[in-house]
Amino acid sequence: MSEKKRKTDKAHLVVDGKTVELAVLESSMGERALELGRLKAETGCFAFDPAMANTAVCRSSITYVNGEKGILLLRGYPIEDLAERCSFVEVAYLLIHGGLPTMEQSMRFSRLLNIHSMLHEDMRSFFGNYPEGAHPMAVLSAMVVSLSSFYPELRLENTQEETDITATRLLSKLRTIAAFSYKKSVGEPYVYPSHKYSYCENFLNMMFSSPVSMYKADAYDVALMNKLLVLHADHEQNASTTVVRMVESTGANLYACISAGICALWGNLHGGANQAVIEMLEKIHRDGLTADQVIHKAKDKNSRFRLMGFGHRIYKSYDPRAKLAKKMCMAVLKKKKIQDPLVEIAMRLEERALNDPYFQDRSLYPNVDFYTGLIYRAMGFPKEMFTVLFALGRLPGWIAHWQEMRKDPEQRIMRPRQIYTGPQKTAYIPIEERR
Ligand code: ACO
Image (cartoon, rainbow, N blue to C red; front, top):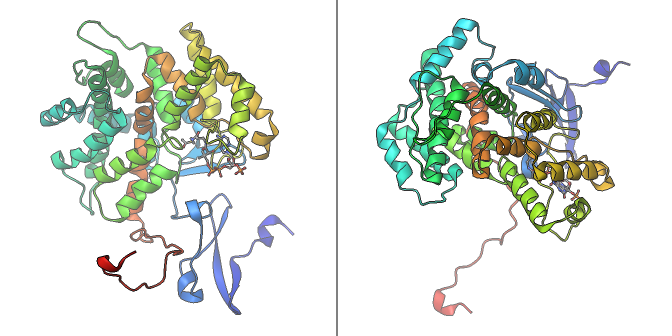
């Protein structure tokens, strides 16, 4: 019997002797899920799934990840092709609009990105009020939610034109905010965006140009920046995207949703891992630790240490983005003639981990964050900016999911359940009688 034939479209669950029929849903790639929407109503039970490891929360046509085979498709296109052949602006368009742009559409989108690149001048003063050393992710999330006070939010029945303007406004301004937050952190004057530059060129110019040194982004760095942003553009229902969707489900505006997503991305187990990887490598270098010592510590269940940049909830094989990032890392070091001791440590750690039964048994491979920080470092970005760069790359994905969520008739306010473990109804004790 063929695999296709063996598949059923109904599953049966017996609870307290009562048989309940559950629909078996199938994705366009053949993965199956049990429909649990009426579980409580029909059985009196909830599903218990901490960390939502077995729970699909929506149907989505944006991104496909196959963790066993190491496949990542954005709107059907392999990440390898997009990273090699598309600009970030094209991929942003692809995610938000559902298809790659024609030349004319791409030019219009780029034009909108330039038109909306300025921040309201009153927002500029906000940056000045952050303390020295403020993390750029804190500034980024606060500034994004502040945009809602300056720019109109989308109406529910928005036109395509309005969506375009809002999406490009956010994409463009996030880049300006990111660069301003860096300038603030190093105490340099802000550099304004310019209409004469492309998206990534503009960003590099705002980051690295200063009144005392002329800066001209070279074509290699612009191409690299494009590729890096493309690698991060979307990754289906990861933690930050789920946060964006959840906040959207409450009816909050787009800026609030994205700001919440930025906060979720900041964590070390998610996008913050790119900074954490470099800090780990710096410490290994500083303390003169061997790869064996580090791996030993990562395996030690009494230690809280984990090998940062390793492991992934979905990938049980090499993360395709990490594969690309590793190649890019080697190429940029060669091109810029950089010898970075941290890269050598990273490669030794990778080799040692991949040959260790602990990592093999748990299918732990490098993830996207393992090598990207090393690339950013070679490009001159300080490590505090790494997660900001991730956010910049992930923004079109978040917008696409926000949009999909808004139009999905199956979605309601997201409200998970719990298994309560606290006390049963307890009699109140007046304060003077408490012991
Ligand atoms: N180092 C050492 N052990 C690890 C690591 C690691 N990096 N990652 C997972 N493990 C172990 C766990 O201890 C656990 O072992 P056990 O079965 O003996 O208890 C097993 O592998 C499974 O790990 P979980 O934590 O259950 O896996 P989960 O899917 O919940 O977590 C995560 C995934 C958070 C990415 C985890 O692998 C991790 O902490 N990695 C390091 C942080 C990191 O690189 N995050 C970036 C992820 S990519 C991204 O978000 C962009």
